[in-house]
Image (tube, rainbow, N blue to C red):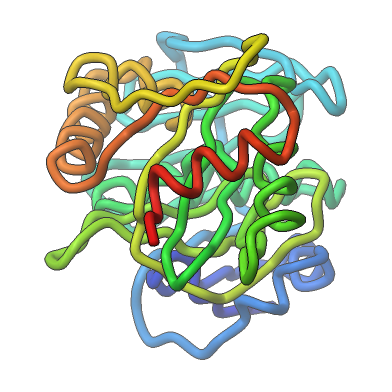
Length: 283
């Protein structure tokens, strides 16, 4: 049996199985997070799973491959996610630290399956992969939120190019945790099209919702607007399950109580980066 141990978002992750685990070890970025762990989440790959009758809660298509995916609740009380026709993932909330999955022979799909498995199992531990591009400056993290194409990566790149000492922590899916002394962002093995894999952790200074505008403006959001700015960046499938959504609501509410959320209307220029920096991390 193959085995791999990782530390992601401060949580131990153990992969067990056969060929899928061997493939996971070769995925770019995974080696950065390969550390010995004694407990945490267990993801069992290469399992023989049977799909029961399900109430499907969310259906979507993977942009990169066109594969049809479904997320739902089985008649046995477990959560199931079906990727295409052959890859099946099962999660039983009565065993919150265990995820099982069938074999995956495509490295891109396996990376995505591991992201899904981690996201659903880590949720009860208060850790959430947040769709964002995150930059570090002066020892603090700023997470830029927005739909694909709105300029998240452009804005963090402008920080890196124009703000002294700023650098990228992750460009797609950092892990965010609410801890006793604040909100923290962790690097992860999932960084979209930008290979940026850092085993690092920083306190979050702010969340920044990016909106394209003909001029640069920034405003701090009130509670309701802050919630609506953060919620779309949490894993979408989980929002369709009542129990998972309750945990996401608690997660976002805890963030809003501790960290400011801003809306940045901006151009793709250095002045926008300077404006957000000076607002969030003043001299």
